Length: 531
Ligand SMILES: FC(F)c1nnc(N2CCN(c3ncnc4sc(CC(F)(F)F)cc34)CC2)s1
Image 1: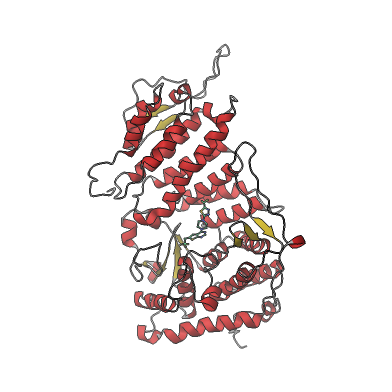
Image 2: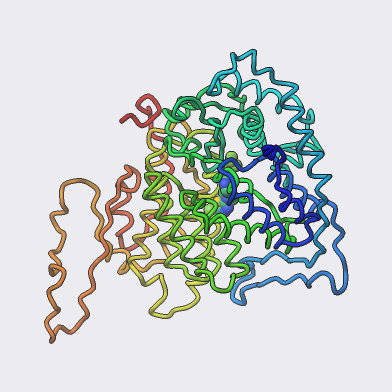
């Protein structure tokens, strides 16, 4: 019979007007089940329409409709730990099929009328020129100037109703445009702060299709090899999430933004995003997507789904995937997990996650387009860790992390990773603003505790490393004290290795430590790490 050329089956159309989260979930489940080519434009329009209707034209209702603003201020500190966003009950808008269909038809018309594929020889695979052309069509139809970092600019609904897209939205629109033209070899490649496309035979070609950050010339049309060679975090050493159509659906669901204001979320949009992420989780499309797992974990922390795994397991799963599939070159899985531990006052675990995050960044060279992760580490070092030291400092319990040499080892490993990140980079990372909080933090640990960490800095084993009992030999029953293994730490950065004696000294020489930490290394060997 007639091939169903419509985007939706009759049955799916009957789900309209969409009035509930359940109906949106049913629609996604039906589409994901019946096709290997889910239509990105259609799905982006649908979730974008719901998000923008519920978050962009909102009056904060008084009375029963909106819950009271709740803030949790930890009684021992003036700095609130985390203010859960106010979640407003709101009526789900009625999404009519004709509205969605009209926008969908408009997008297809814009793309088909602007790109003459015969000009590219109707190739089986997309060419660089074709990908660049689609990027130009999206680029040239955007509003001249608008605030690019605003929320709710990531969907095709935003593009079609307001001609505005953010950096991710442009990349998604280009892939959706190529899908309209029948080039199913064009797919999204996602790093932790940038997006580009792969295309061609076996997806071997890459092309920039959007801008990145502020004041950076866009490199649209160029391959991303230069960014990978420069070893900048932005290109994750060539380990981006390479999307299939299904992971592209996961990325448009993951980029749903329930925020109405800085402190108020739409309950319905958050619930829709959470439910759709579980659908994608159950169909296996989050398996190789650490950030989407982290997003789902954050939503589960705020509002646990009965019968589902604990959010802590999702943070751990994201780390497992990053290690196994992406060469441990992603940082966010650790800072997602560290943030969770911090919000839940699990400070020793948070320090370990942040040290693991620093291990992930150490092999990169810091480039000027890596500001986002720089800000992440700066906030951990200068806000979160000092806050932990303050609240832990007051409790003189023996269990305080200030008496725990493993915590001191985590802290040193955190700084060691950042120092090694800076090594060989053209742009310095550490400055005096880092040194003061560091010295302050280290000084909170007793010298006994600090001296309990066995620090090695080179291949040569420490001559004075006391031989500890080989593991497994039971401590003799009459030993008066518990045999506690001393944490061992291998410092890889020159700066931290140079600090070794200062760190273990009885009295901390604040000035010497600051000088060592902020020393500008003279000539960088060609300004980057080589092999
Ligand atoms: F606690 C921290 F680790 C984080 N909390 N939220 C984080 N996000 C939020 C969501 N987010 C993302 N979540 C899903 N997929 C992607 S793809 C991408 C790069 C770009 F936008 F395409 F350019 C970003 C991103 C960026 C990282 S990190």
